[in-house]
Amino acid sequence: MARVLVADDDHDQLRLFKLVLESAGHVLDVAADPAEMLRRLEQNTPHLLVMDLRFPDSRVGLALIRHIREQGSTLPVIVLSGWPEELYGQPEEAMVQLILVKPIGPAALLKAIADLL
Image (cartoon, one colour):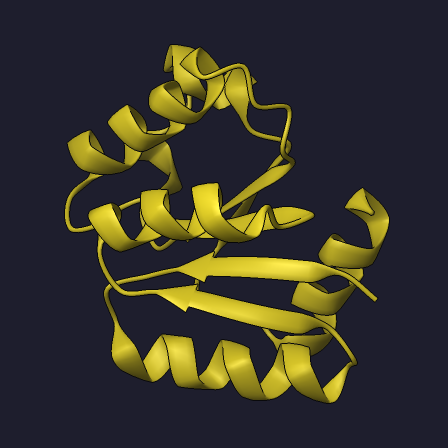
């Protein structure tokens, strides 16, 4: 299975992702704020990043996506958002592999991860 970093400022979402992904055999790391996400990316080198777009707002999420790519990372990125239209049509849309709309069921999330890995 894969090392997955999940970044979301909603602690309930993080607990849910942790339960779902670990029960599927993935090694999960979580980040509850942008600075923590960047630290964990540097420290643990995950196979995949799953991140909220509004982290805490879409401008920050977009900046994080740009930062990851400007650092030369080819890490697959899944963006989860209740407001995907804030990413559609932006340059950062082409920098992520997949955009999923919240709420998402566990089976759909696991399938998306499996498809990217």
